[in-house]
Length: 481
Image 1 (tube, rainbow, N blue to C red):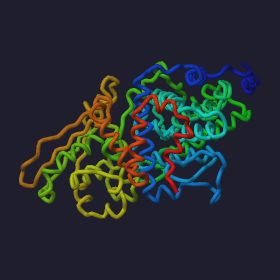
Image 2: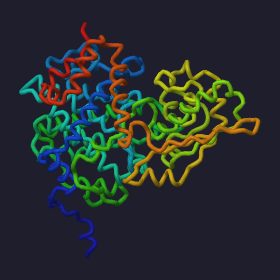
Image 3: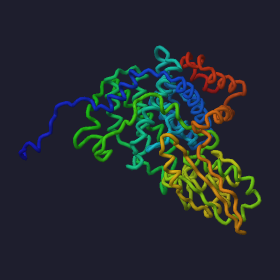
Image 4: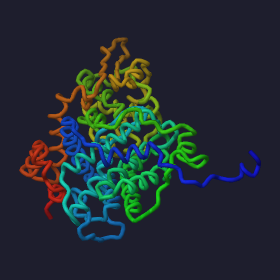
């Protein structure tokens, strides 16, 4: 080949990347038949809405909500649960997504990449409400179907593609999944979906530095809202004829695989279905980063034995998985609630002291208790290789932690180890009744006992929920003036 040939790019249009085509085919054509997936999706929706409404009690969240131009009202816009806001669906997706994610209390998926699939509800609910108020109403079964598919896209792409390891935040997968199901709910065809997805892949991706020391801050609570909002924006552009990029992933020199995955190809390691929804992890008892859930459970169990011996503790051994070591083990000052709910040692210290952990315990005033940092200074974090191995084992997917307390007089408490948190699929029968109680508690500030009971009963009546128009469902979560 001559030097001239090397200087010339081939401008023939390639076929659509098979990975993008696969996602579009799944969303457009695949029929969900899993009864377990639909049943679980109801609980995921119930829990996510409860988390969103609880977040409204925190000014750090509410100050970011509402229209960009004050007092703007969009006729037939998308409603924001728990508020009087009616917004365009792009901005509504940000509002809803930020609320759901704000307290780190919504559902979770752990693999090579971790994340929170209910984040996609920012886009799904905003788009579905808007469509239902401006045309033929969608049903809540349509919403649940979109949820199952969004969960699947985010979760399957997370199995073997570790964006975190590349410094990119996992909300990239929220943007991809929300774009696919969002444009489908908006009535887009497969070609438009492919175009929108190509833009979701090549879009600027957020660095995850806001989740880690020394920069941990509240962006981690609104990053998912930002991703869902961007997904709706890209869907809107594609519906208005924005061209796509058929080789967005595989393009030589300039594609996603070369520039984001460092030359590797995007992996889709199993066939699309309903696997992720069927195996989703709930945060039931504690608003804590999921790798710490079993550690907090251990600490709560130890609390009764420590009420009168806190000052006699010599050291605390925390045994955990590699993921927790990399993400939430930190020393030094903690500067804000986002910092504290991503600190393993802080969460364990609070649970040892109080026998509980709530979102209020991350606030500045509560964190001033000097006993918390005293206990943090006594903690030694160790990785257990078996915990790390079982965490990655697809047959187990455990999230184990263990705690042992040693005293100044040479005595010690028995080591407590919990392999599977309450929200794990292996503890589903134990967890679901408590998940319902969590929902009822989260609605208590905004709704009467009768209203809460009616909404709970709706979620427990699958046939009634499936048939309900989305606009009527959303109305149920707007407080009376």
